[in-house]
Length: 490
Image (tube, rainbow, N blue to C red):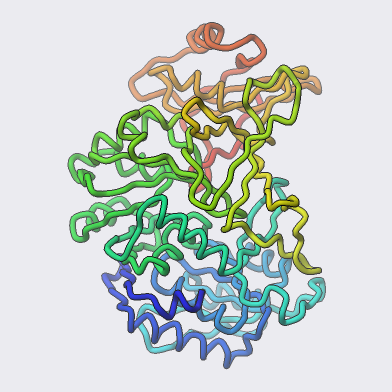
């Protein structure tokens, strides 16, 4: 990774301030940060909560920590102090580097007063502090995970864990992007999603370091800033999430008309309606990408397939990327499963080394042969394209019959009067029933009888919603994933 940072010939542009950080400025910045952190006691295998928003400071701070053998734990730049303190205690962090907090917000949780980084560069401002000693976390030897970035993830269990992804994994993922999407030094990448998230970390930061592309970024997603950037720069690659594409398409007019712009969508499934609307406005296809924190990027829809079939986005996530193998294992003979649906397993050169624990590296999640269970359900169609059918944990068990929410959602979403829908389990009398939360499309009248009649025609009896709820909006994460546990249990 440090070789990629040292050899980097691209540049970083902060759209919030209009600052352009050249190759030489970036080299001076991360080198000065590295010396400063070393003088403050950063040693090999020390964990550092890296809580930095999108901008040139993120890759510079990442490189400075790794250069000293530290292990950065990548945190969202807007993480509140209480969450940072909880993560530090849970994962044995010794230091904090943040750029979006005031000193007085952090002083009560840190050991002593945090100080300004102060490396004489206007784009490299932030706070550095030390956490109180954590006796619950067993110290690791300097060789254990030294210099390895750690990515918070819920894994497939719902428990917070740290995926250890060494430099070789991150750079392998960058190679996937270069070969599958065609990124090179002529590209200008607009980083909209948080660089701390695995999606932008691999698709923007690492891919830029590997390809020497130019990266534009803003601390918070703002459509006005995006439109301005599209006017002022020749942006060629824009990784985004569906909710961002929806916001950009609303009232965009001809401001999105950029046929040369390659748009990726990940984080959650992209509704066909959103994809088609955005493609009509931009003049270019939206390519759905699938990945996980543990594996990095897994698959992407080929550009030609989207161009010839605009309705392809309904659950499809394309072909495996180079050096990535995907298996759909139908490991049950239960007749209630739809034919071909199975658990998705991945083997990749960008695979994590394992989960970081107080005792070292836990590799038990990786099977012999290098296979990792993603926790997703999928199926291959007749064209060899992978289609996702939801999470294993979301599957609804209706008196022993399995219902995959994505299938029911696809059926209901076909109604013109439906803007959004989420299907989930409702627990009643110790058994599960199918419930659908629906957001009606503006200007349409929708009633339960119409939905029930449509489902009766399209779905077998046990897949039909037992309860239907109308909502103004679905509860979602910033990346657009539906928070099913917050849906009403009516």
